Image 1 (cartoon, rainbow, N blue to C red):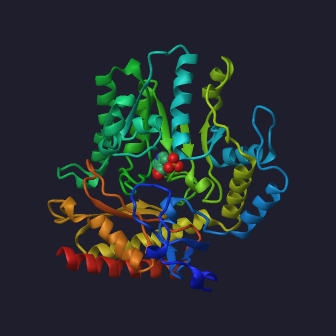
Image 2 (tube, protein in one colour; image 1 turned 180 degrees about the horizontal axis):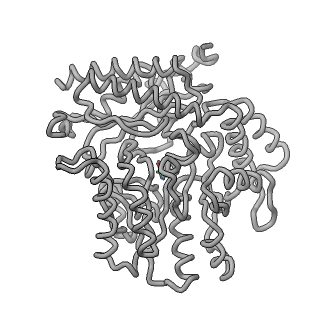
Image 3 (cartoon, helix red, strand yellow; image 1 turned 120 degrees about the vertical axis):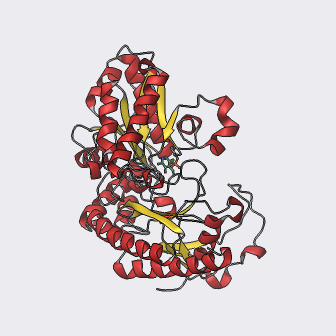
Length: 457
Ligand code: PLP
């Protein structure tokens, strides 16, 4: 790989002037120079493997030439078109192609610019549908705990995370939760399939205790994201959830912001179970890091009542932006041309096997799970009792730092409640090769070895 061109003139972190930006923490990071494929170079000359595609975004890899060319062509024509004044071809065509990839009948698309906007649009669509169809008492959106559906106040209200919600709770209507299906943790005599049913039935219990006439929707990630480190429920869970929603006339929303757009080895995470949600939220991999892009998909039967009563009372200035949609369209084109969904399935299996191998070598890895290239692992102090590593040790952060020092980016967030522990996620771009998987696994193995020694695991 060629080295960064600007590395010699790049100031190191200590020499850089104070930043006017502020984020989650004041920790300074190296300046990015450029990115290509699964690699990122910084201005101080380091090379990183993007083992998590950023936060599971760069699905087709960085600096794809065909996507950049398509964006440049669109840039030369029009970069903005306000939807109340003009239609634009990239948005029309992307909606058409997306509909063809989604479950049958999911053919009404509403574009937004990110994941939080997408999930919030889903619940606003659901609510307006309920009002338009004479069900104004339905407003509660049941969600799972833990879960992550976004950072705006509407999407945060359906996020199952006490720490994130605490400060803002007085400003929003926090929604009822059911436990995420952490079936592997349960120490009972049930089979996994029985546990799947039991977790799904908790939704029914919650609907009954809340009052079925007040419940509007249930939102879930078919393959878990950051809050549950790629948690997958037993197969029995998915059809049972659909059955329960149908029984009470409740809309099923799938948040596919992270699991969608091919990452799991199928276009949607829910496709692994042939799931039929009523509304789907997409983002991240849809724009694949080339442009801020998100979407909501729903069938005409939900959209029609709104259109008949004044339209969808919702929208954002940049919705359906032609440049973002041209990027999304080219991303889908590359996904098809390079057969990346099949590669995600194949490389995902390889990586899953390798992570299971690491779990044998390091017994403090208590569970490895996920689908395709959305994989996660949980780390505990004692695998028999699943006693967590003391939070004060910040094992997740230490592991991420060890990998980072070795030139690999992986993802992880210590989560309280349900998952209650340290985890990490590996989700490289869908163009990853078997050889690159080997590189990634070797660095994770070295990092886990240091962690085991340092923390006496
Ligand atoms: N939903 C899921 C499942 C996510 O993983 C995320 C982000 O991580 C969001 C929603 C929010 O997306 P964004 O950060 O683009 O607003």
